[in-house]
Image (tube, rainbow, N blue to C red; front, side, top):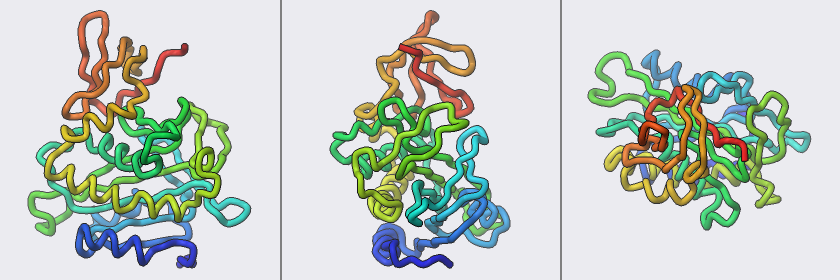
Length: 269
């Protein structure tokens, strides 16, 4: 186990337990992927309680559509990235828009007044000045047996650039938190994010995405811009609907994009 002296684990654990009794925090030195580990536990029926798993290093981190997300310690042993996964049983009426809700929680925690320009790019990224600050990966598992009747175990993975990182191989240039918070560290960022994230996810389970539409719209980096989708669709982005669908005004009318397998990018210029 790594030293937790720089990480406010006790405070974070107390905050999470107050919101969801039994929710604990784990910090590991190195792992292949925090999402992969929690999915392994759930599918094997070994663990299905709420947990926040934080890794100092990931050797096989994953983003959406299988893209890699690596993390490692910096020269001063201060992680230039924050990688963690929140796993918990959940049974919302509608799962649509969960990644958008998570994005809202993380963006507001890192940039409460929106003064730093942290925005949200459908369906699961945080951008700043058209550069990628953070990514979100959500996976669910059916737990063997009757351990979670009527529920699924959801794993919410988040990767955030805290300091500068190599842009080689990236489709989108990276942004990082120290651009507006020069003294930011991974422990500081986790302390800002953990409780608001869990609170938002629990509220989503009761109310789904609709109550968050306006908060997402306030940070939507695609709204009002010409966009190109990976399925060939192009048009003017009109924001998102009440279940998190992306609304694009095309030559044939307004298309509601719901598949997370579709990538969308703003057109050049």
